[in-house]
Length: 82
Image 1 (cartoon, rainbow, N blue to C red):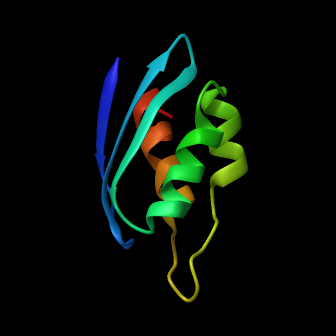
Image 2: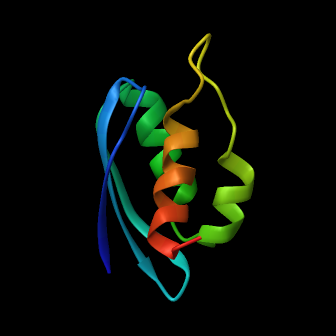
């Protein structure tokens, strides 16, 4: 199923992704640091959504209270209803 998440507090504006049987697919960020978001998207591909939430939650970007990885964790958590 395709999900769209509007990010808060980051340079990226939106994350889209699929979750198929608990596995993350097709992660795409709109905006943000291109190299970092592309790398994050590739690393997330094919991984368990719950595992990614645990790994990425709480990561900060500089002095910001969140980051693109943290926002992906929030998006996945929302999609899973947890």
